[in-house]
Image 1: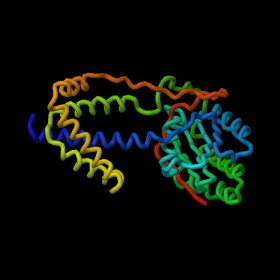
Image 2: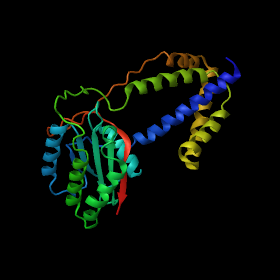
Image 3: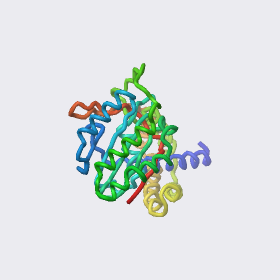
Image 4: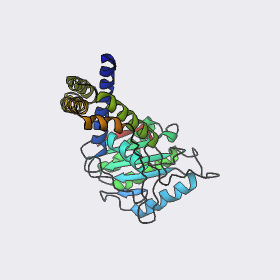
Length: 292
């Protein structure tokens, strides 16, 4: 194996590990299982049962899944990041239509966001979702009347996406036992990562890991991330270069790792109370946020 080839593989390997490190940080967000279309974790909605019945009937009529979520905080991240991760974790909307809407409100943080499924971005634009919050929701929020503001927001969203989808003739997609994440992509990343791992294991130098970690950290999250990724890069490269290239056990593990197959399985378990979960939809990242 040529020196340039080893360096190239090592660069890709360190980048891959840094990406997994970032994914691990994001994965630390903890979301409870949804109990219905209305998940009032802040206890600020007085007519939650009535609103739940309304959104449940609306889903049966149109297949659109609108969920309202209130939370006391965003677990240390931004409302935008929290909304996207929650949307994907729950799989809001039908898998083959991506017709979900998340209305996220935090009275404690005084912020709100409407996150839009990809299949509804044509009917409900980012600008329109902002106007709905400005005109229908925020005025009531400023008066600490969250029940009125949220109900007004739901009505405005329903009006905006009217006619986009109907339940007529819809048979749906079986999403039982499936995870909202793209398992094929995760499997590919895992196999590719082990291939890089095997190649890097036979290299003896380790300083390059710190350099690549620093550069990757600066690109991903600035200086603070760069320091963390530099340390990760040095440690990972040192272990791979020194241990796996110098011991028979290490060489055996390095070769065996790329032959291993780790099936990735999962699925969103259904919640209690008769709610069977959402349909496996995804967000296109569209929407808007407001504060008051």
